[in-house]
Length: 235
Image 1 (cartoon, rainbow, N blue to C red):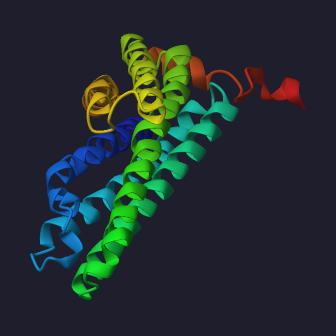
Image 2: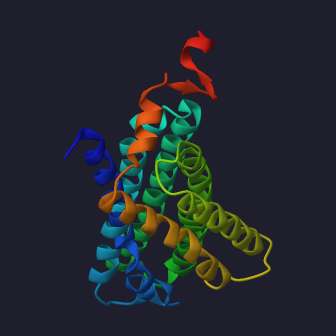
């Protein structure tokens, strides 16, 4: 396996690994009970969900780091932007996990009814962080990496187009939630499917096929580009 094939495989595998957090949709159900803080049930499922989200945060950053050496040859500024937004996404996911683990700590410490307001505030904070970290920022990610892949033709062009469509739908759903037109766990959950299909399809393609050889040859036979200009021209 050539180095570039390994790069594509690693990026694709990390994209697929980011789907391990899907079970958190159910694992976090106990947290949403109005009396969770004063309860005495097991927190095992919640802790498992938190660990899965931590894995997703690191896997997301890993996808950007893996792809950067290749896609920077198309546009280094956009490639750096993708690394930055993926890192921001990972940090925000970890902030959400901190809210979840704080709730668990309050429940285990027997905080009682006096902590009910705090518990509800932490859940609301987690939901808003989720809206940004795992809904809005993925749309930005799709636009950045999608544009790089579309222009470079490293993958079939229908894949980035799927990402663009998913990004537009996701931003529209997020806006509807922010302006109170719909609940966060309603419309956004539905419009998130296209972006999820985009990331899953990209992961599978990179694992199975890798980068298109003709596109790799075209990229590596020219200087690294910065803002769509050859590096030599910038200097």
